[in-house]
Image (tube, rainbow, N blue to C red):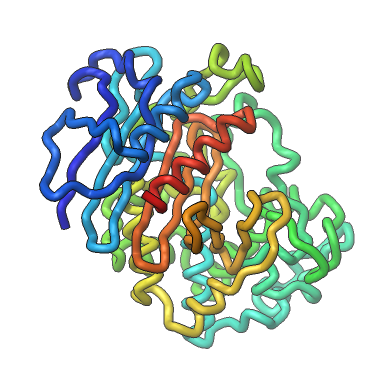
Length: 390
C-alpha cells in the first residue's frame, strides 16, 4: 500500500506559519503513479482544493484528511494551521477526537454479541438492564436494543441539555449520570414511532455491553475492534485523561457564534471526553477510520447477517438530503451517484466525516472546530463528497 502526503503551500514541516493555507482545501484526489515528495501540491487536486476552501474564512483553523482508493493507495492532506498561537502546521494524519464515529464501534460490539447469541436485538432492553431505563414515561420494557442502535427508541438525548463546553471542559461524567440526564425528560416519541438522534441511547448500549460481558465498554472496543483491525492511532481515553496522546492539531471552540466565531476561538484541546462515553469518546486518526471502514465492509468485524442489518437504513430527519441511518451507520448519498457508508462526529474542538463506497474507496475529513454557520458545515460535507467522488 503506497502512502504519500499532499500539503497546502504553507511553509516547511518544521512549523513555519501556514499563511497560504487559508486558500487551499482538505480532501480527496486521484492517487499518483508514484509517491509525491514532501511539499508537492497538485493544483488540480480537488480534495486539496476543497480543504483549502473549508479553512479559508478562519472559522475552521485547520483541516486534515486521508483518502484510500480501492487498490489500497493512501493519500493524506492538510490545510490551515495546527495551532493558532504557535502557527505550527497541521500534523499529517494526526489524532483527533472522533466523537460520534464512536457509535460505529459501539454498534459493532453490540452486533458481535448478537452474533454470539448473548443478546437479541429485538428483545426488550429490560432483559439486559433491569429497571435501569425508567421515569418520565421512559420504559426499558418497551424499548429494544435495535431501537437504541437505530435511534428509534424515543429516548431524549442528554446532550440537548448540556451547558457550554467552557463550563464542563474539565469535568468528569459518570455514564449513569449521562443516562439519567436524558431520562429526566419525557421521550421524544413512543418507541418505534419516530426517529431522533439520541446520545442517551448509545450510553444505554454501552451499559448493556458492560452488563452482558462483565467488562468495560472501552476494553471491549479495544479487544474486539481496535486491535484486530490494526488501528494503531486509535484508543479509548482512560478515566480522567484529558490530553491527546499522539501528534495532533489543536482543537478550538468559539465563544461567539456565527460570523464572529473566527475571532473568538479558544483552545479546548484538553478536555474530559467522558461526557461522550459510548456515544463519542474515542480518539483516532483519519487513516485509522478508513482502515476501520474497510475492515467492516470486508466482513472482518461482523458476520454477513449482522453487517446486512447494520446497513439496513431508514429516513433520518435532520441529516442532509439523501442521508439515511442504519444500526450505528449512515448511508450517504453522493453527488456522483451511488452512496457511501460511514458516520460523522462532532465534539467541541473537532468535527469529522467518514465514508466508504461500494468499490472500497474510503475517506475521512477532520476540521479543528465545530462549524457555527451552515456555509462552513456544508464545506466539510462537500469535502467528503469530493474525496469519495474524485
